[in-house]
Image (cartoon, rainbow, N blue to C red; front, side, top):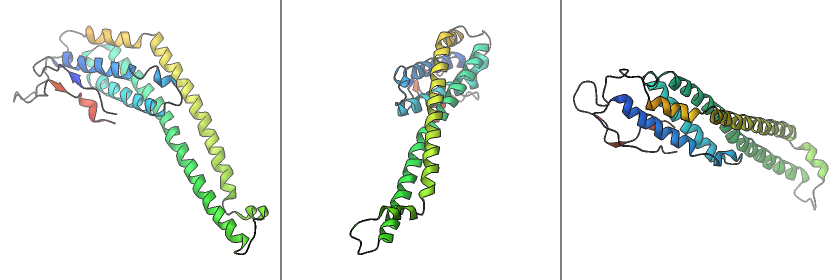
Amino acid sequence: MKARKVKGIDPDGMAAAEVAKIVAVRLDELWSFMPSARDPAAVHTLHDMRIAAKRLRYVLELFAPSFGPYASEGAKQARKLQDLLGEIHDCDVTRPRIAALGDDLRAGDARAVREAAGADAKDLDFALAAQAPHRAAYRGLHTLDVALRARRDLLFERFLDRWDNLERKGFREHLEDAIRHRPDGGDMFTTRSHDSNGAGPPHDVASPEEGSA
C-alpha cells in the first residue's frame, strides 16, 4: 500500500512541528480503513491497515520524546494493533497455500488411482481410492485448515475488541492532543540536515517511514 503524502513540510521548521504533520496524516490513514475493516472478508483492507499501523508506530517510536509520554503509549498501542493484524494476515495467506497443496495431492492421487484401474477399464472401482498414496494427508490438511480458520475468527474478534477499546479510550484524540501540545524546548533541530549544508526534503514529501511495507 502506497503511503499518503504529507504536504506542507517546511525544511526550515522545527523538526517536532514537521513530524507532527506526519503523525496527523498517519492517524488519518489508519482511521480511513474503518468501518470497512469490520468486515472479516476484507482481507486486503486488513492487510493495508496493518501497514498503516506500522507506519504510525515507526514515526512515534522515532520521535516520541518530542511529544510527551502519550506518544510512547501510542507507539505501543500501534505495535499491538500491527501485530494482531499481522497474525490475521498470516492466517489469510496460509489457508490458500494449504488448499493448493491439497489440490496438488488430490490431483496426483487421482492419476495414481486411474492408473491402478488399468488401461482397459470401463469404469472405476471406487475401492481403488483406498490405494491413493496421499489419502492420509488429506485429513491432516483439512484439520489444519479448520484450526487456522478458527484461529483467524478468534483473532478477528480480538482485533475488533482492541479497536473498539482504542476508540472508547480516545486513543486518537489523546494522540492528536499530544502532537498539538508537545513539550516546549524538547527539539532544537530543524528538518534540514544538521551539517547546515541546506540539504532537506522538498515541501511535499513522503514521510520517513513510507518505504516500509
